[in-house]
Image (cartoon, rainbow, N blue to C red):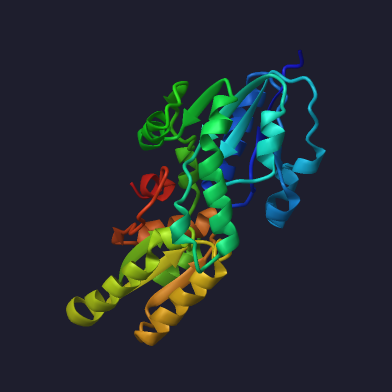
Length: 277
């Protein structure tokens, strides 16, 4: 059998913790002498990183030693996984509860519901389940899934040793106190709670303060629009929406922040907390 272990993802994007882990896993596998490719649907692959993965449509059920399926939402990758030859491993990143997305993106809410409904069936058809946290592993065991072990999210701390971007240091390295959030602009992150709290903090306690929000707006555009409208309605010009940032700019934000705040109500792992520490 070919020394090949591939990975299947529901989507692939720069700045995404699951995609970042897939690339680290691929490097570890190739370093150990395996052939290894990453597959994701074209429609959910960011153009900027498309050269780092293959289209899911090109995934063939050829002989391989194993396949790792990163599971967090229902997708066409699931069928390819259950039909794959070799050892099948589910990499469980948790599934955002669907109610967070209702009204903002009902299609994604349905995908999350379907992923939750299919979880037990998919896990029962694999040889192992690797949860990225004990929280995730406990959730699986409550469903009666036995072949579960915690394998913490792959993370390379040297990525944070990059020189910070000078322009971002200059932009935020002034006399204002910076409060920072890093993460997707998605409803489960509850960024609106942070904006409301910051509005009170700035107007009552510390007018010399700034809230920096770093994260892609494309996860849930309606939610992002609501956040922008909220900051405008509260007249908070010091709420800064930075969007997705490259490593150099992100590190500059971490370095200029006095406080990192994560108001999220659901996380499978929450990599930015580790980065901030």
